[in-house]
Amino acid sequence: RTQALAALAPYPSQLALMERVAGALPPNATQFREWDFREGKLKVVLVLQSEAVTSSTLVAALQKAGGLENIQAVPGNDPKVLAINMDVLPLQARGAGHV
Image (cartoon, rainbow, N blue to C red; front, side, top):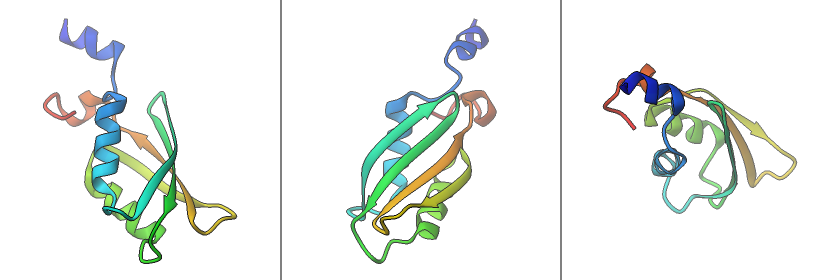
């Protein structure tokens, strides 16, 4: 039964995912502009509020958060705005104890 329920909702809730992503980012350094999560793919658009924050530091921070793979920063026309695309691992792929 647990496997059947996991098949219906294989990914963490959006709230849990947002907590994980926000918690991985440096405090007071970014602000969410956009959030798009569909079928295991997550795209966040961040406004960088500190010149000390780089795309590589943000990607490294998200890699340490766990449950995220193929994290790629996509710079845009505005140097203070950064899109980051990533894959979210299904809960079963990480073990049932992780959210």
